[in-house]
Amino acid sequence: MRILLVEDETDLGNAIKRALIQHNYIVDWVQDGEEANDLIEMGLNLYTIGIFDWLLPKISGIDLIKRIRHQNSSLPILILTAKDREEDKVVGLDSGADDYLVKPFGMAELLARLRALQRRVPIINPQKLTVGNISLDYSTYTIFFNQKTGKAQPISLTNKEFQLLEYFMKHPNQIVTRDQLLTQLWEWGNEPMSNVVAAQIRLLRRKLEPLGIENCIETVYGLGYRFTTNA
Image (tube, rainbow, N blue to C red; front, side):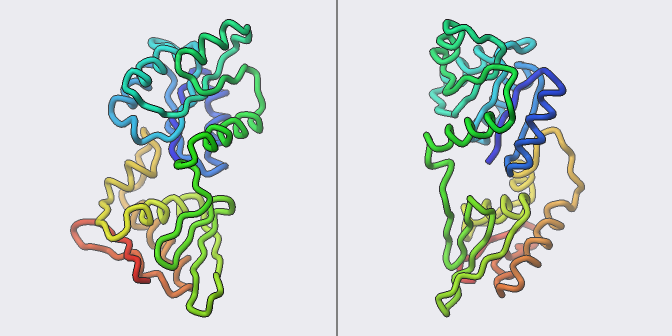
């Protein structure tokens, strides 16, 4: 799940980003409204949740929300602000925010509010994803392979392994390019090593090897990778 975080306070932004990454989110963090607007224009559909500060340089969080809603986007948005008057909350929610969190706040509350937003839009928060004999459990970040014996053997995955396999399973039997994976699963603004995708896929295949399904991710030379469901 990819989050657009727009927060101009460096210490707070860093703290939020660390907490989100620890809870398996992919985070694009920018520090002014203009940068955020550029990302939104490049690919609003990349994001599943937005976290916007109200008072931002160049373009305010409220104006960003209005622009997003003008595009008829239903992106769930949590607004952060030191404004705690009732009339301010009304302005924020009426502008199109889905929830409102007053600073200062604890990370546990922020994460709880994100989970609540996800529950309001169940399609972005499934409990399990199953393709063929392979199931991903979102509550434990575990893969289960349903064997012919009827027993389901679990294997734990790292955040990136889970995100990678999830993306493949959402695009079964399709050729997925390296650039697609970088765009979808790595943070904007970070320049990963050129071989990072191939390296992560090797690690994922090793995790799948004990189940005998490491070949479910096929290398299509010169094009990319393909997840096959006949594992």
